[in-house]
Image 1 (cartoon, rainbow, N blue to C red):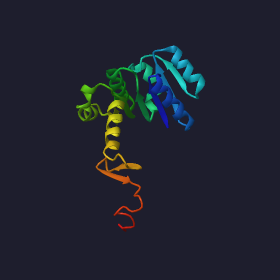
Image 2 (tube, one colour; image 1 turned 30 degrees about the vertical axis):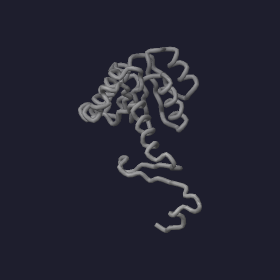
Image 3 (cartoon, rainbow, N blue to C red; image 1 turned 45 degrees about the vertical axis):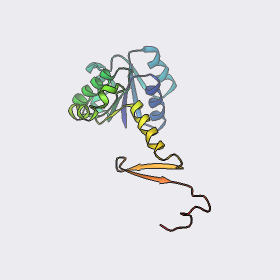
Image 4 (cartoon, rainbow, N blue to C red; image 1 turned 60 degrees about the horizontal axis):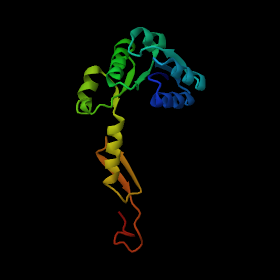
Amino acid sequence: MKIIIVGCGNVGATLAEQLSREGHDITVIDVREQLVENISTSCDVLGIVGNGASFNVQSEAGIGDADLLVAVTGQDELNLLCCLIAQKTGHCQTIARVRNPIYSKEIGFIQERLGLSMIINPQLAAAREMARLLKFPSALEVDSFAKSRVDLVIYRIEEGNPLCNIKL
């Protein structure tokens, strides 16, 4: 799979390293030359120095035949713009990291109107996961299904509990 990652901070570097290890064809884009150089030498990835929202930079990165563009810069609007340009130019799947809580209420609208495959708000996702786990404080494991509408919860029942040895 050909993947372009815009943003070489901690998230971008980790994604590039992990996806490269899985055998994907990775290209990273960032305006910071040193970060691009560090990632491209430590991982088997192509590095491009430039603005990921630039049509020319995305073209140089191979957006025309890319399968996925992931925008994880520190600027929400830049991530959205990178994905919009990639979607309209390369017709690939796009994922944008959007951290501003103001956009959280509008994620569905933004995703649909811009044609993005996915928008991720890491802080909101972490908060939701914590809240979900706190609903079942004594559970050993909680797995969600059907878009989090159904939870499968695993409990350990101590000997002597009225539920012990009851077949379901």
